[in-house]
Image 1 (cartoon, helix red, strand yellow):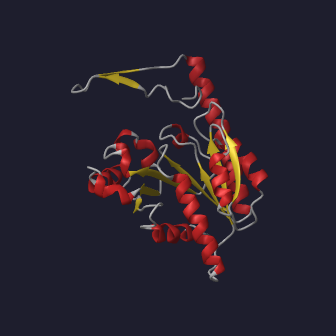
Image 2: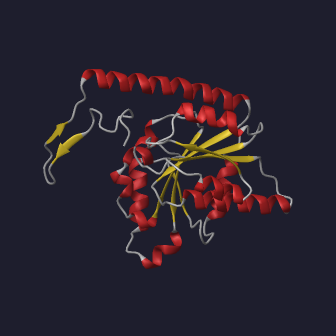
Image 3: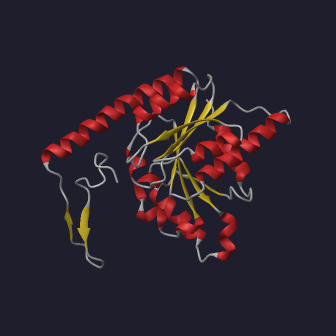
Length: 250
């Protein structure tokens, strides 16, 4: 984890299973002040990003989730569907991707192979995208006015939720292979999203996973969340995802 996003902030605590007693871990004053200043700086850049996106009629969606949840596979399926739909005469806005990973351009190449406009953002040792990275990425991406820009954040269920990128929509994604208790283990990301995606539904017959339990946990954390169960691999449930994407347009 990075050292400036609050991973080990003053809300961290130690406790023993079966006991309500816990002990908070606290930062030294200078460190905490530095983190607060960094987050304030990020929020100002996020505001600038939001104003720029609005001025250009661009919708930005922040796709966050577990490593291996299938985020890139979902984007591949989306571009394949959109390109086929356009050839059949259906109208879709211009689409582009800001692809976040610590290293490699592997995922950006996959999106590009599906006909997508894409810019890779490598974070080095960082475990999340921030508003400055998005500002630079948008300038390089040069998406046309009215476009739909999808941000694939670094695979991580903790730090990405802390940083406002200036996006209009947040999507939290997990796979059925992550297990029943993933939302309750990482509540902040799922509590702050408008849409939760449960991917790899095609594997449900082979797993001891209680899908209703996952949905119930999501609704306890976020009563207004919309939930989609789908398989980016088999195509099950993807039409609902495409409908949701189009519904985000202003």
